Amino acid sequence: MFRVDNFRQSLELPNVTVLPEERKEAEAEYKKLYSAEPVLNNLTVHKKEESRFAGIIGELVFQRLYPKAGRVSLIDPGCPYDFKYIYEKVDVKCKVRTNAPKLEYEGSFFAYQLDELKRLDVLLYFMSTTKEFDRIWLCGYMPTVGFMNHPRLQVWQEGEIDQSNGKKYHAKTYGLAYEHMYPVNVNKIQKWL
Image 1 (tube, helix red, strand yellow):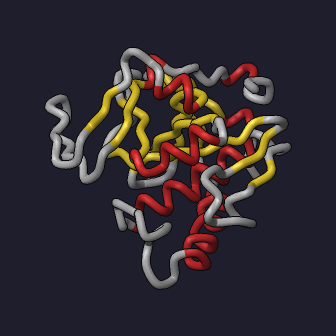
Image 2 (cartoon, one colour; image 1 turned 120 degrees about the vertical axis):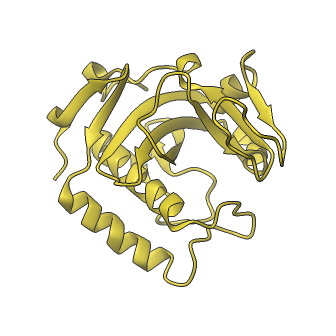
């Protein structure tokens, strides 16, 4: 079972240890959802096992942090958000990184997701993990409308390369550095919404 006292403050971003039983649950869910191919839908850009697994682990950690959140993504896989929490629709974005995230790193999503997210006024909740999937960083959150109207929003075009890290974008992507998002306060983890 997940324990809230498992938090650590590191690199100015709170993080939580993924427990062995959480990993087992994520592995079982992955096998159930992606037995044939690690693809969400016909618009999936990155057809990577690690990307899908990060998404599942991120949702499981969110569910344990916010036990009153109802997980919609299991009931309706086509739904553009993952959770219903009080009055908010929440889309958990968990990205796999080669290193622990820093405040200047970006949380992002693909342009094809924008219409649904904006129309439904979804709250974006950004997390990161590494390929070991042993820790999840709680990077920040922001309503879609605030994200898209932020003066520091980055719009990456397909084929463009981020000179700060060499990342090549395979589809139009919207990104915003974590330092420009609302920080997750681990002391008020249950009361952020």
